[in-house]
Length: 210
Image (cartoon, rainbow, N blue to C red):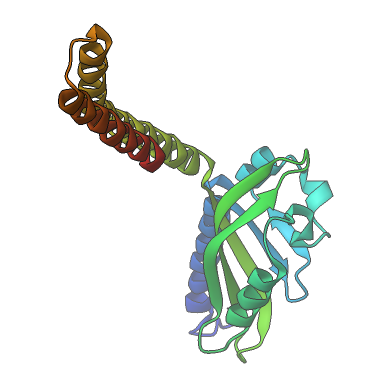
């Protein structure tokens, strides 16, 4: 039988396509991002190893379910509405943003999530691919830095307040000591009493501002 001229070409193309698909699937399985893909109804068809490790679901527990298994109440319903509006939009077809997911054990995990609609030759949605990056360590570091900055600010404020307190307090101590000696004339005593009142008011204002 005579072989059609295009047979070997089609065979070669099929082989390249198979190798490419295998490479894509291996990249999916071995990615450090938490990934899964679903059919057009949002039913999970497969999850990668990173997803299994982080969320605690076995493949058999995740496949056949929907992404609701990792949904957290910390993510507002409105966020999901905006998400799906962007994903099914023909002009956009994806959504990316921060949400909170939930592991099988109940741990809340902030993630940067990206979901893309996969379309067929006719433009119809045939599935969705989801990829998430864990933000836990990043946000914890940010919180620690913010706490350190807050402490540094409090320290600076304390130094300023100490300085502002020291001056009127010194005047009060000096005036009180002079009055206590009992050797002042009425004019001098009145002057020092004014100092006590004024510096006490200044001290009270400083503490109130702090």
